[in-house]
Image (cartoon, rainbow, N blue to C red; front, side, top):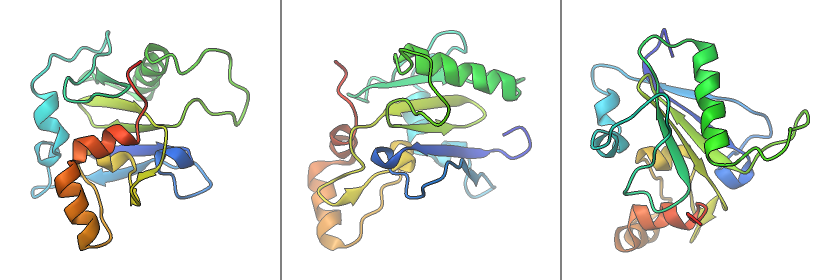
Length: 167
């Protein structure tokens, strides 16, 4: 993240949209054509005050998630601390984890400016698969009927269906 500006994302488990049996973090680099402000979620994030000390939430997201600011001068240790702060904030770690054990299913999104963690309950709704990129504003449909369903149901309602309730 220090060398390549972009959107990094991780799908934490099959219920979070992971399609591979191994763990991997993916990065979409920003360019002159694609920059941070081209990511649809940026408009919502720009409306709130972020802090690297206190996780917050996006008022438009009616599901369990946490959002935290990434400070300007970050390194891997700072990113790890922010990640752990979000896990604790959402009560994802209630006991020490053993090697290979995972917390609740979740999606992680990260830019040089913010980190978002969303708790997941299912990988799809009405045959529309959702991974981390869905929470950044990128949903993929397979055909016109799925597109029409999504237009009527709305992307936010779809994200709500695959995520954990606020309770």
